Length: 96
Image: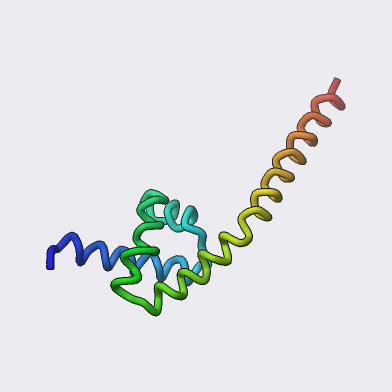
């Protein structure tokens, strides 16, 4: 087996363990490890299935849950953005 393939399997397992331990999104795992989101996604959805099926299914469950909630998280982030904008505008107007 080529060394780079073995390393990819180890990387997939490490990323999978991180996602399970922290219930992290692909984006969070990518930020924590310094690996691109697309690489993290490929590792945990393709390579991990081949190297550790049990871990793969645990990760898949978390990623499916995160996907089912992303519209809620996006809505909350947008609401928070506009709340902060509104507060900043209120402060500017109260100073004048």
